Figure 1 (spheres, rainbow, N blue to C red):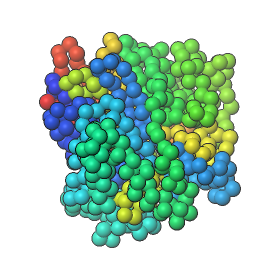
Figure 2 (cartoon, rainbow, N blue to C red; figure 1 turned 30 degrees about the horizontal axis):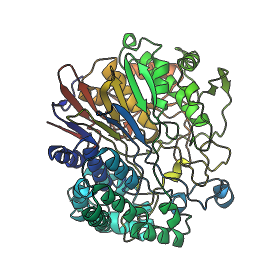
Figure 3 (tube, one colour; figure 1 turned 30 degrees about the vertical axis):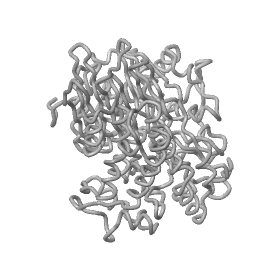
Length: 573
């Protein structure tokens, strides 16, 4: 296929990010001598300003980091926890099993701690230095772009519900139009306050003390106090003490091998294992012989994903609260068993049963929502960024948290992470609500290695579509030999035959969407196998927006790709 852009190549450093200004912010840091972690944090903070429809400074920011000096992989969960005041049956008793929009679904904002933890442990620069672009974009504004303008307009009623959100997102009583300057002055002041507190402490005690002061300004200072005061007034459960006690966690990755590539993903506190589990199933097939996006290929990939999603639904949850049999789920023996559940002639008409990796038997489905009527699945969304620097360090992060279901905090300019939308009200579900428990997170960056060396950081927005878009791009690159930009722009498909991650967890049995560039004959053949085939446009933002960098160690060249389905761009040098 012919892509609309060329793959960007560099020999020193490359960054690919979900917004072109965020890519530029990170690239400036690289050019100023910062490493991949400094640049990644700069781009991540910028995304929290530039894409506040989908991402927020007060949201989540899971990261996978590789440090070349000691050849180690690190994973920061970047995910908040439920406040101490919540009870396991809170939403059952108060809201009839629903987790409503608003402050009651708030968990502690984890992104600021995640960014600063990455800087403190692996970076070289100050918070003020890497936040400079984000502060400018918030304080002085940036040109509104079409996709964000359309999203705000489509969700105008939600934004208008809260005066503080209306003030920011509907400044003229309507969504800002493309090309108009979009300003978030309160957000700019909050980031500047953190940088100022850092500067005062660093002057006396050095860089690490400065970073701690920036963090404390958020979690133990004026920001936490104002957020807690507003949430309590609005009837929410979050309190200052929840902020003050919070810390992000370093978590082990899960990993799988595919054709000599070792893929690392986030653990079962997220949906991260879905991707390597699906790969484990698919490595038993000759995918290349099937032909790219043939009906046979799309069928087998879709069925493998359905099986992985059913295990996600039954098993995944915060490992601090539920026992997840992750070693068994990731084993080749279990993958072979799950592969045996796929028929090449017939699709599962609904989500398949989960599996027991110990006994290799099926587990009847539980907690199944009523199937949705014939309507389009709603998008769950975020952004993504990745960096490889001249030292061989790599950074892969998926910051998130949309602003249309929880209010902006007056005077602070952030929202308090509404990620509680990914929990389940039923106390028996592995993703149930509990004090100090993490919701099961959709954002899930990945990082792949070849011959023990960094090969490919990659990720995407898209809610439950994330592992699906990532899987297809990974296979496009590593089975079909496409260049990164070609692999990203190739037409995609996505199944919705599982309970969705977002409240109210919609379920669309058998539903399969195809971008319209896929051959219509393939669509007909898929329908004959039992898939409920729906057609997207030729290229849609609903199919994700993958960014990646491919590391060609033989020639010493970094190859970057970014998805034109959204305002993602690559810069390299």
